[in-house]
Amino acid sequence: MDVRLPRLGEGADSGTVASIFVKEGETVKKDQPVLELESEKAVASIPSPAAGTVTQIHVKEGDLIKVGHLIMTISPEGAGVEPPPSAPSEIPRPAESSSPPAPVSMPELPLPSPGPPPAASPTVRKIARDLNIDLARVKGSERGGRVTLADLKAYVQRLQQIVFQQQSPPAGRVVPASAPVVIDFAKWGPVERKKMTTLRKTISERMVQSWNTIPHIHQFDEVDISGLLAFKKKYGAKYEKQGGRLTLTAFAIAALVPALKKHPMFNTSFDETTAEIVFKNYYHFGIAVDTEHGLIVPVIRNADKKSLLDLARELDQLAERTRGRKVSLEEMQGGTFSISNQGGIGSGHFTPIVNKPEVAILGIGRGVVKPVVVEKKIEQRTMLPLTLSYDHRIIDGADAARFMVDLVKAFEGISEAAVRI
Image 1 (cartoon, rainbow, N blue to C red):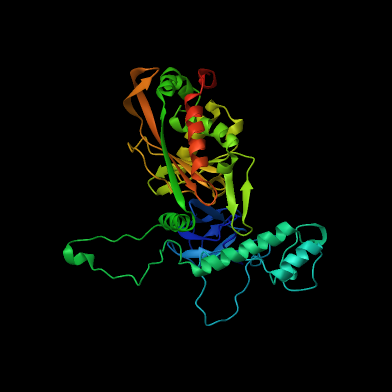
Image 2: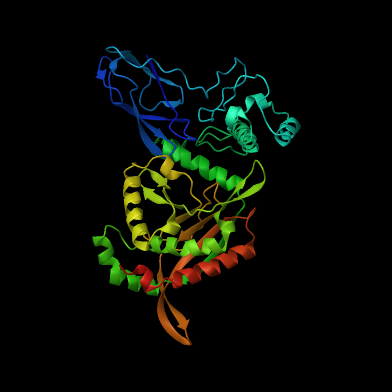
């Protein structure tokens, strides 16, 4: 039986073979990991679909493969072995063409065979007619295959995604304004070349996409965290005994929730296929984690429903698993707002890039002791630099200023009662 790369999750259509755990001639059990794939920002094990003997391995470490790619051939053992799985239905077989092949990472589009027009409302039919879309190719989600407006929007979105990636360079490559200049750096001294990892290529691709498609504007401010530092000193040891650390990132999440509820535009996404702003009634925070492999952004979900202790515990556990590359692709999706804290490194103000499809991100720098006027007296206070980067298509400067003012108030308004355990 042929073993092919299965779909790992929404948007996970390709990856690099990181490790191969078996050899030709080796016996494997059903669900035994046979290969490790580095996909997007996660590493996933690929299990064997059946027990048997590995007769041939069709890939090697370092190969870039996509969904449906033949990984290995297994000779099933015993009776009752599951029949060979057919190729994934969502992968259309490309027609022979003289045109260049599509990028490996291009998502596949489900295209059911044309047939009788499915059931759909007059509105949906009119929109499809105006867009010159054959409804028979749109997969309906309602009973009997009825096509809804949401089904049509999803189909159009996938079409646009394919067109975008067909016109874009492969992952990690930046389109130059002119032909790249080949430079022999070695003529000036010794050099060493190292291939970009899949993770670094993914980071590069996404940063270029975010920077090129989102008009970035930055709002700067400072917040007095002297009171929060006093709370850390008083309760830090108790938090550690409970399995969490009382960090400024945890305080930032606690301050951001009320600020986002008061300014819901910052908790949205822009649906470019329909020109609609999507307001989200949930608060999932992407947390930028610095790892030896590169920047990875796992997500803390439903932060508005968690105590400061809950957030402290989850942040610690998530950061540890992220640095060990143990987070799944699902754990890095669905964020509504991101936080990048460089204070521990020693950085001051910096301008983070918005994590698309979100519309804003908060950058946190290193707190600095400064003389500050408090009630007409000069006092030493620790001031924390903040930077809000936001999508100017969706958010105006005045809105960003108001958001930052309320965020500073929320930071400085965190009470001891909220911290005490």
